[in-house]
Image 1 (cartoon, rainbow, N blue to C red):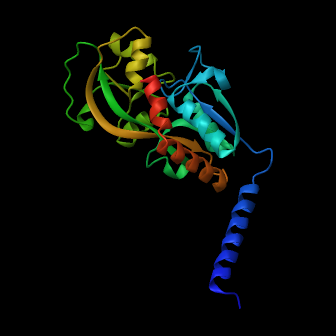
Image 2: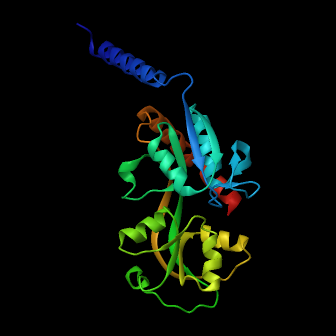
Image 3: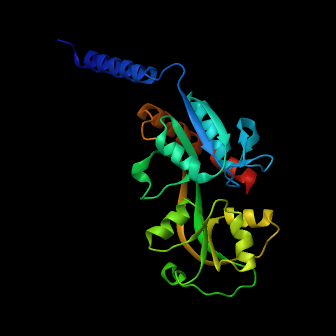
Length: 253
C-alpha cells in the first residue's frame, strides 16, 4: 500500500499529466478567427476605414486581446469588417470564430462562450446640442423617436423592453440623424457615442439618460473548446493583476 505522501505525489503527477494531455488536445494548427468592428476607442481601423487586418487595427480591446492570445499560446487571425450584424451572425454560426468588443447581456449569455471583461461602458440616450429634453426613465423615452445601431446590445435591450428603435447599419449615421431632427434621441454606448460624434464634427451632445452599465467581452462560438476559453481567461486575469489593462486603457483615454 502506498504511503499518504506517495499517494499524494502520485495523484499530483496524474493530474498534471491529465492537464498536459487536455492542453495538447488542441490540434497543432488550431486557430481562432477573430472579428471586430470600428468601435472606438475599444477597437478601430488605424486608417478609419471599414476593413483592416492585424496591425491595421488598434484600440483598447484590440491591444488586450492580442496580448491575451499571445500569453495563452493560441494562434489567431484578426480582421475588422462591417457591418456588425454580419460579424455577429458569423460568430454565432461558425466554429472557432470570436467577436469583440461584445457587450455581455443576459439575452446573449447562452449564445456564446465568454472571456472577459475587457472593459466597462455605459448605455445612454443622447440629445442634440442645446436640446433641453427631460427623460426621467427609459419607459418614458418610448414616446420619442430613438435611433440605435442594428443588432447592437443597446438596440437589442430597447427591443426587449417593447420599444422600436430606428436602427442604422452604422452608428455614425445617428449623429446626422440627431442633429437634423430625424431622431429625437440616440441610444448608444458611452464613451463611444461622443467619440463618433467628435469624428463627425459634432460636440456638446446632452446625456438625457444613463440607463445601464455594461461590460465588454470576447464572445466565442459555442463550439469553441473549453480549454481555449480557460486559457484565454487565465491570461486575461493575469494581465489585469499585473496592471497591463489599466496601462493600455490609459493610453487611449
